[in-house]
Image (cartoon, rainbow, N blue to C red; front, side, top):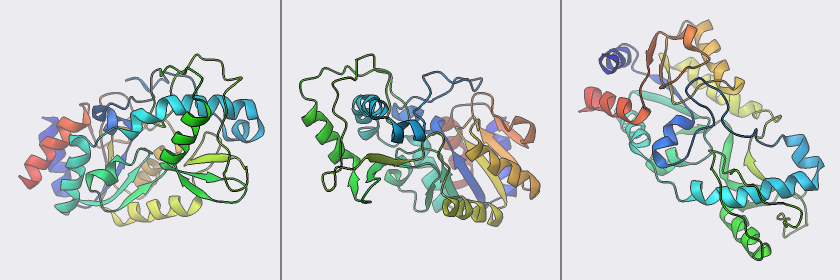
Length: 272
């Protein structure tokens, strides 16, 4: 019933503004942050000010990141990502905004993606602005900490991991050009989404017929505000998410099922 209703929703509103979250990448082996009730299931990520102010915090962050990054790096697009590509090719997806930093939408073939929270693929020096690939920084980390045993723990969508090892002797990466602080090009807690990125996404919402949320609890304001803007503009909102979302009271339609199956059924109904 939910899949039939979703297909009907899209037929009535064929130019979708799609907002995706961590649930889209679950089938790629990348765990989500929250449970079905929207509760956080792991230690909170590092805050920007702590990262910039404390070398100890940076050591701890990069030790966890060295353990967690390989999970994201080897992940492959799953049927949910590929279904969104098919919807785009079929003319139903006007814009795709993702809260994910794993790059799987682009690797699946999505042409126009706004990465609301940035990308884990690159790292920037806070002093000189040099940009390096996250893969090259991983090689630096593994070389400089070859004698330390850092067992990988439970991973996270941002490339973090639960690690119990002591970080006192861990060597965080420094910029090879100026020895400055390196930071991944993702939005940390306590760091605002760049205004130009927000406005680009908001303009895409304004041009759409309706909003479709896929795999997000919307507990973070940076994503939830698009639902408030959609409601203010009288644009209907549908969501595919097995658990509770912050926007449940605003939804026209809720499909409480995993993303991959629901999106696959939607593509079959619309493009098959």
